[in-house]
Amino acid sequence: MASLKDVEQVADDLSTLVDQLRGEIKNNASFDRLVQLADEISEHADQAAGTFSTVNDALMNRLQELKGGSSSGSRSASGSARVKARS
Image (cartoon, rainbow, N blue to C red):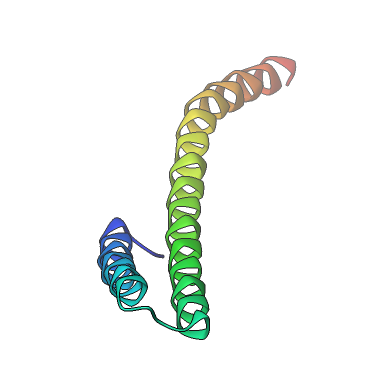
């Protein structure tokens, strides 16, 4: 699973790419180069969003497990008490 450390690396890469983009704009770069840099920035931003989504999903699943675990445990205990009472 991706981690926030991975996002930090992606952010560093994004910062470098943005600096390159600014430098190219100041130096009258070709539009081909600007498009290439913008595309790389977009790919890195998508990676960061994907990592955040993965981490969020993992945390939400864990929270649901914890919520479900405590309430399902009490349900199963009361359910087995009913089964024993019927026997």
